[in-house]
Image: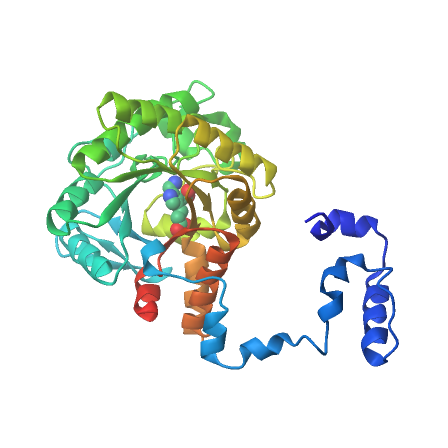
Length: 388
Ligand code: PBG
């Protein structure tokens, strides 16, 4: 392990060309050159080329399949769905072709189809009729996700329903928590404040926790099986666990979006869920994309607070975080292959620039290889179809 550390490698001060030239010399003549400058090769030295030819095991698909280290299965996929008011509504999201806003009746059909394909779980997001400054639509008994959960539970019995717990879709300002203007002014004025002076408001952590807890209890009572908080407030896993337990819902697991980065890759989701922040951005609560050690701390704290499963999000740009989390923690680990990752593949494929199915499976396999046992992806149905 030590030798794979790029910093340690650098310290060795062996220029790249020297390493490769010593290898070249070796294979170019029968003379045996000691591995003095490249002891990172020692392990494989006795069996090197020509005795060893890795291409032998790549000759046919049955051989390749036999030695394949990472396998995808529909059983580890979760399909995200966006539920909206109305009946018979099936409105395609412009930036996510193949993904729809679905009314409850359509969501039931979609859940059934997903289940039939062998995908065991869905995660629900809601587009409420009305938004306000306390996210009523998130925790109301007749909230849109509550309605969908009840209907799906009734019709598609053994599908696992996850509920994304966040307030941004239900807040008039589009932030994931309660907003307080830093200066005495109405929230209406705060909404009008341009991003440049956005320090004039605060996303209030502790007041938000109560709404998240209330939302979680309400979702579980409506039939949601797994609570998945994605808001990135501090202490929310603990607050939610406590509220669930007090409500007697001791058996509901929490899948925490533990390391969720402030990311440009959420763009299409915000169109799908109508949750664009009306001012400022999410950098005061979601993580800085440059930070791996902080991601580990986030995960550690969520585990201490009672998370049953943890998630890293987005997926492909953060494979190192997934790998580090897998190495370090023994909880089930999920990764969210997010809207922007999906949209990029779709856009390039529609231009004929890449082979959609190949790139889709390669992406999902990479996320799995990095260590995620569970993958949330808009490709869940398509991948399940291909996997048969
Ligand atoms: C809610 C939430 C978001 C996503 C999942 N839950 C958006 C955000 O944080 O802005 C993103 C999912 C995706 O991009 O596919 N906060």
